[in-house]
Image (tube, rainbow, N blue to C red):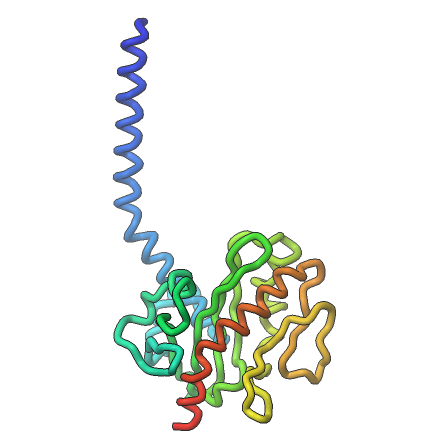
Length: 230
């Protein structure tokens, strides 16, 4: 078998495999996008403590999420689809130029405001959603996830045990000053409405959640205050 034949055969196989992979990626893209959309709906609903099995996520989202908005750091409403905003891209912009999604839900007559967050853990990005009660002070629920935090340590931010500490915590103090929740190394004081227990051995990830909550919620402060005084 000549070297020329081997080269032609190998080149043809590379082209064929590339075409097959390209075609597969094109065919699968709508399914992947749908899966990501459903997962996003599940995460938004989880932030207000509504379990949403995959098969029911779209139905439940449409039932409970009554309004979606995009606002800026001044609390002004912008045009666009909040569901399509990618926080990863927005966080690279100056604060004044960011599009900030807001998802407003109504459950049993009570209104909730859900906002997305994104930050950095030990090994990569972390993200989540925080649901606020209608007073825009009290946390109704929180849902966090990560790309590559250490199993058994920082990865525990995605566990319900960690997330269940957040309902009832507050992001403003009694005087109306912005004071987001901190993840405390060790144990937080039981009567501290602005702190939760940290993750043993996951200090850097815990700090990442603290920073994500502070930076991610602060940009909504003008919007929150505008709604509260309207």
